[in-house]
Length: 143
Image 1 (cartoon, rainbow, N blue to C red):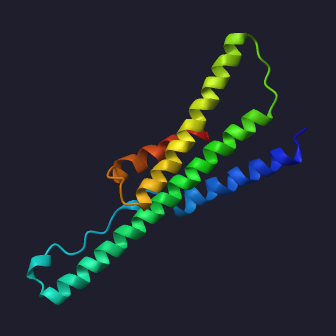
Image 2: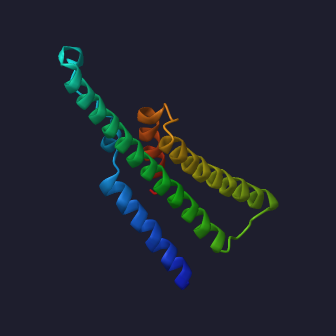
Image 3: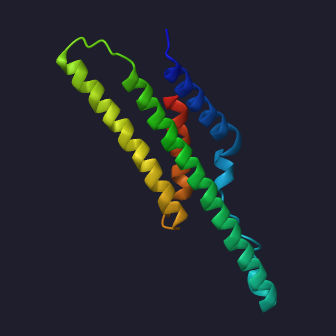
């Protein structure tokens, strides 16, 4: 029988997964590049376009940071669930392997949170390629 705490963790994890699936898919992170004829525009129009591009890119960074914060939270909730269940250890090696796996998941959650912080600071240059990887990892982890 599951405890109330375990049910609450499951609900929280499910809510995060729904948000990730519905709101923060890979298509959300493509920066907007604006028109390709920027040099042909008069200087005031160029400034308007450049400001819009900057605003769109900042919004994309924030959406990506939200994605990685949610991914981090989901990983850490999963670890919490595993820690709250009483495992049956077949051997000391099995116990050590489980602990290593949990530590690896905690580190992955911390990396996702750190990545979100870098994105907010505009210091994450690998945004496009790694969003796909993170989404694939999250999907694989939850299957």
